[in-house]
Length: 129
Image (cartoon, rainbow, N blue to C red; front, side, top):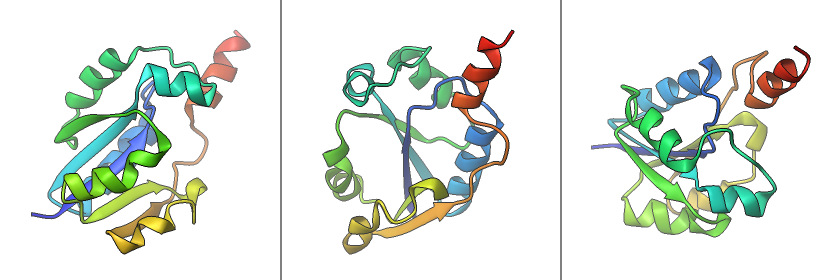
């Protein structure tokens, strides 16, 4: 079985999120999604609309997602890859090169993001209403 892992906050779910999850799942058999905990988002200076538990429930309902785990810190990625026997690490292309250090442990793939949509854009658009 080929295992894939990706990371993100996955707040205000949109078509871009679905596209990256679908494309990640197409690369293997089992997709693990690590989502930033509320505490980790605080450390990053981000605030999600939905709490971690709600974002986890939402992601678990998506057909492409097989498992959801918490992301508590930047440094956990190698441990996650090793612990979960991950074959491929996937991120959006805006992170190109940032996770190449994982190539010693698994394949690293940067997928194109969906044009014209992001959680930041949704928040900005809502602020103009």
